[in-house]
Length: 390
Image 1: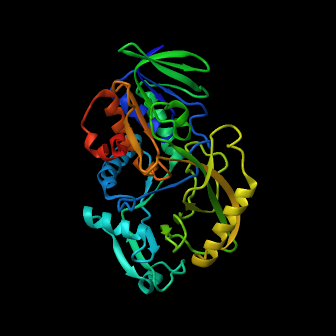
Image 2: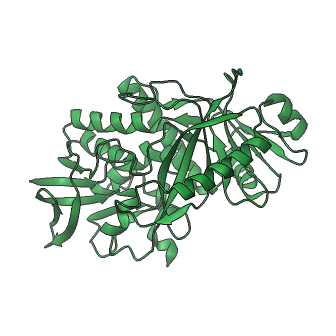
Image 3: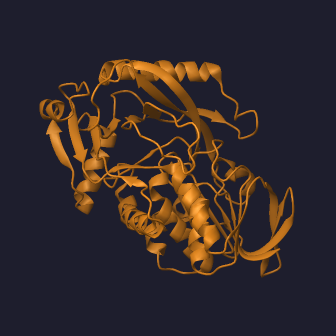
């Protein structure tokens, strides 16, 4: 019942962290309160955009380079494809915050991004209605990754390397024991460990009393549209729209053919669209996981209005709506660090705010290194440490 490291939460970050620890021969236990792949967190929904010209802040780009490198290595190791290089097209006013952020990161880090006026953009991307005042940016090295298959593969490879994974086991509390051990109590057993890594997503607040910074969890909706009539969208890339005076961005994907699940059962069909903004604030419990029909109706109307205005080609019925849980830090940037007052024995990764999945293999390696005291990747996440709040 003693391990060198315990990872709490086997979603995207936890699964990758467990893999990188096991690869180094560490005796590691991974604990997950639900099934290994589930829809009660932030990593379900078929697809996640991956991009380098990072609008959120240029400091993320070196971490993205590491992520791209590690995605390629993991694909080679597993002989599977997770990254699909469809490219990504951005639409918005030239001086709008997100479009400006894309151009700033691209310039600072020499990332290939092509800029067009609305007329050129309309010719290259005929599926969209592009207002005359808009600028269009094309990032060819972007695309999407498949979250469910990624998590299932990381956990499977971790087990092959010797990790012990326990699903349907909920961590109730943990506490430091002396100077060498941490005691972790679940609904099924008590374990001890030398290092604890908490990657609990929307459930992190319950396990981080010493974080000292509030986390907010929100409910977000993902929707799939089935076309009314057959239209050739085979060359449709991923896309992002920044609409004036509307908070956040709208985004979407090409229709993704199965198998996008590691073990597909009933694949969701159609084109996925969503609105990335602060959704409905919730407290994570069994009640919050139930659908809120009024909120769903409101968000469907929001998406329908957007599609009718800017994406008239995508005309059809909503065939599926799913929820995703975001976890926001106070400044909406990731928190990756040692938990205060734990003598660097507890590592925390939280606040991924709906834009973390593309970083999964990089952050998995970073968290494993932090737990082991390896400083090799420290520079990549220095701007994400808790000291920025001081």
